[in-house]
Image 1 (tube, rainbow, N blue to C red):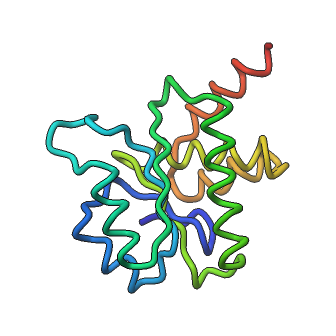
Image 2: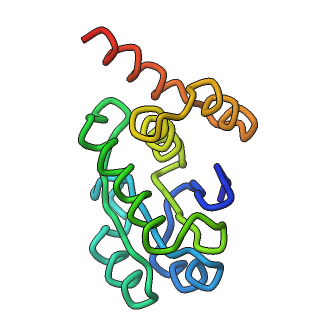
Image 3: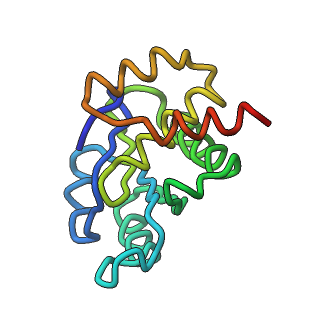
Length: 149
């Protein structure tokens, strides 16, 4: 897991068998950005959601590919983050884990949600990502494409 903030973390895909340990480590929300069937052997979101619920974790499935991110995806991601904050506050004790195949899509969605919905300064978001060796080129390209409209 890579911490974007004290509360928000990104990672590559997780196996449902990891969810009990994630709950013990303080994860209270999981945001899965991986489409089902992306790889033949990957666990399905419904399976992970059921296990998450058994461990008191709120589970969101917002499947995207880098090329298919829509404004609705970004808004859904933002709503998942703010819903977590409404339930648990903003301390790092109740963590959010956002995951996809590598963590990059999740980090790019986080960046876009911060810029479009949380009024974050793009330079600050980029600096946070750079400090963690996270490539935000997908977010940059998305913003450039959608600002032209």
